[in-house]
Length: 327
Image 1: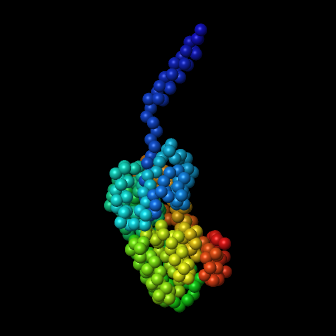
Image 2: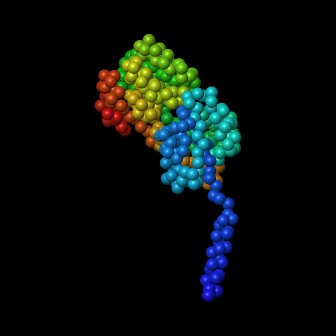
Image 3: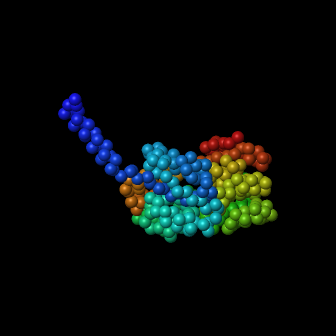
């Protein structure tokens, strides 16, 4: 025979179970990810892309579990800036909870939504582009990380230290990196260095730009990559090697693909830090109140295999400053 205490405990357990069953399921957040390359490289809990993997690592460090607390909706532009508006609009129609995107795609998001929070994964000039009112108090639906304090002039200095030639340094750039090009041009004027400007408006113009650099006898190459050039890292590194051009890039992905040298913000770390902004927003913070932050981790990476193929000796001063030397 069941005593009264046991009966009451049993009834309480049944009531608790029913109450728990009646509670709504915990929300699974949908995080939109816009990228410059292929969508397939950024989908799922174990993406091939190093930057998206960095972002998911940041979320895991904060206690988020893919499929349990959140899922991602990834869209890639495949090196076609003309696709940015449509992809931004698609994520807005999906009514995702927050969107993470790199600098080149942010203007399209500004046009697409003023309500969905957007975390910037490396905006070049968020104030100048009208994405935020100020770095300290964004005042809009945008926040995140800026590259505003990262000067491309430093890359030009490193390139001239590597190749101290009087010949012009070719600069491969695209329309959305015009602001960065202007930084480089100002630095070159101050130092009396010659530049050869090579604008690329679509993927089909890349090989022609290298032919122009060769014809002009350029002494070295600076690549300012955005939505067109960044996804073509392997092809550009191959063309630079074939053209016998010592080249410097802003992202290590080019060096990993066979390029000679890079100096710039660590994009994987930048995306990892973007996770902290997403976490705050999902917990109720407003993007307008979250100050924009700057990169804290930079990499100077030198590919010795590429240097040997070019017959180019690397100055000891550069090797001592390198964060990583790839043999």
